Image (cartoon, rainbow, N blue to C red; front, side, top):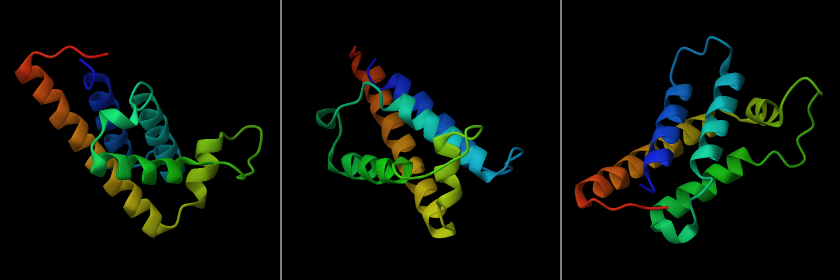
Length: 118
């Protein structure tokens, strides 16, 4: 099923962004970034509708760590997470939530129709 794995990973990303953040907000956001990256691994633009493509584009912009400098003992995602404003964090949470719902709906549609993807 094509959307099973992305559904699982975006659900995990959504959970990472929920309170509490025992290891700090930046660590939780970095964990969400990692889950999203895994969830999008085998997803292509043609697999998505226009809304989902827009959300993925926003997500990729949030995760883009190009030009972000960070210490050797700190990963790029944590460093990028630390640069996000409160408004950006809210928008990131909204985008991840929308994508988690979108992938879950597509996965359920696959289950109902008996489709196998890949």
